[in-house]
Length: 400
Image (cartoon, rainbow, N blue to C red):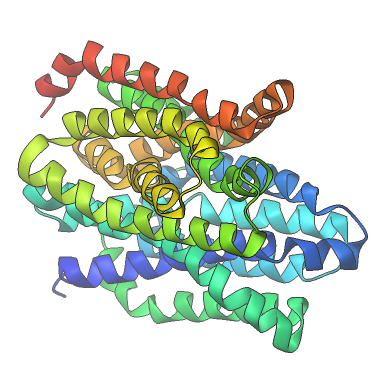
């Protein structure tokens, strides 16, 4: 059987990535309605995110072994099914159910990127990897846009619980639709590969830390993810609290920043492949994030919506748009046949940044009494990124 083309693989992985991202964001986009039904504060959505990403971090470490034993498409199907079950459990009006659902969604979300990296590393020409990986990674903000557009509207028509079940059904349908790809794309699986708890957790990290280039990329992704999740989590709050912008307009500005992230992932991937190379491209993005982080608190003194849109769109394009270039470089630096394992190991560090970033950001905002000051503090992680990329630039050049 002939292997599907890069276009087919990319379309399938993009669809899977979009739907698991949609599942992850389904509860947060209607958090007030869910919180009212459960009888808790909507602020607890932060705990939901932390639980989900803790599950994703753990699952990403096991993903390489699962892909080797069962195949990348089968691993993707398992992730979709887990996300569907998790969203369905979240439809039960209970704080405990929401916590369990968050964990299940995280466990389903974690293996998706390592599995897709395995597939794309095998099917994508080397000179197009950054762009192709960037296209696939647009699934994350696209999933957020889908959740933001579809779920609130569905909730208003059929109720939030029924809306959750419709999202779950969509995830299951996607798992069914990619079944025909199993025979060709999972042909490299090794049913004899042993899965063990200890090796599953430690194996990907051992691989990452035994290759300096992968370890540096993992550290860079940890620092980048702090900026990304802080921007998407606190932008609306910053606009509303510091700039006195209404919630509807603030939500619209966030949507524009997310769409800028989609455009950024494509643009930066193209520029990486065609002009700069991945390491210089990541350094440029770190510099852009730092400039925008410093400019954001100054928007309070400039009552111009067009300027706010420009600054936050550039902020979104860079802070949300780095992932494809990074993942392509991880796949390129990984030993032959181990792209999924290397991706799982570095993603664990990425997700760790997602877990610790928002609490640190919130602490700074609380201590300073300003969300703008907290945004300015994001210059610290991106400055460390720049130093790491400069310090170890020769390491990346030496790798194949």
